[in-house]
Image (cartoon, helix red, strand yellow):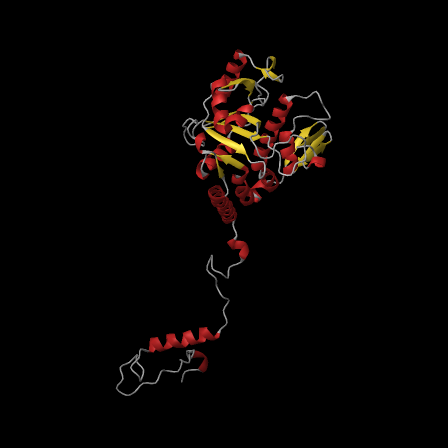
Length: 380
């Protein structure tokens, strides 16, 4: 008999409950004829379903943490879309305003203008005029409120295709006006409107003029206010426009230094001819003030604050001018002015004084000075 310690040891394993089978059912299948492995898989799936699992979220899914969804690239693309959309809205508003609110130039103007390419890509010479007509209701003695007026502002602008130049012409410059003899150049506007002014200036300086822009003084202040005003830096300024406040006009008072001007103040500065703080100033300083004002308007248009105001500016820009240009051409002009550089301030310099037949004093400009000024302008 074999001792117990010599007997082999066995480990018993209890098998899981077998799936019920029927007599005659093939091995590996249940009574329903299903594979035992399929049934086991279903049981395991049921057990797994009972256990709570941490939800998994695919990258980019709505449930993902917002910090993972917001990336620098997406922020940049979002800002770019906002900028493009804002500019597109402003563009549409400008074209609508130019179609319905812009005042077209007189029909005869088209016959004296020289053809030119699109202002954004081709050099264009634009004549800017402003009249000295007084506002209705003015009590200024001798003020003209309805009849023919003289050009208060005369400026040539060259822009487009990489060009940038400005030339102001003093209003007292004496020229030959067909049918009227020797007269101050601003009288051409009173005799024949902008068409005659264009012809006289072309013949005087031999500069071809492609487009006309007249400042609509009634709506110009609204454009300046839409831009948030403009800055002016200079000495003391006291001027009475259209007779000052006491005559239904406007009185401008500025101390030395830098000032933010609203629309009415900017218009008064552009029209100031006699500065009571400096009686010795002439039309040359006046033209310099106008060019400084124009330059600051351009700077303001390129500022961040004007970008925020862009739709408001776009709506108020076309009504502030009278022009032969359509909406798209005006848009090209403003685009060319925005991307062009800032040219130096240039004023046609007189060589002396001349007395007119009626006794008025005017300014004479030598032929050599006219040629030099025209050459600098066209080369700009």
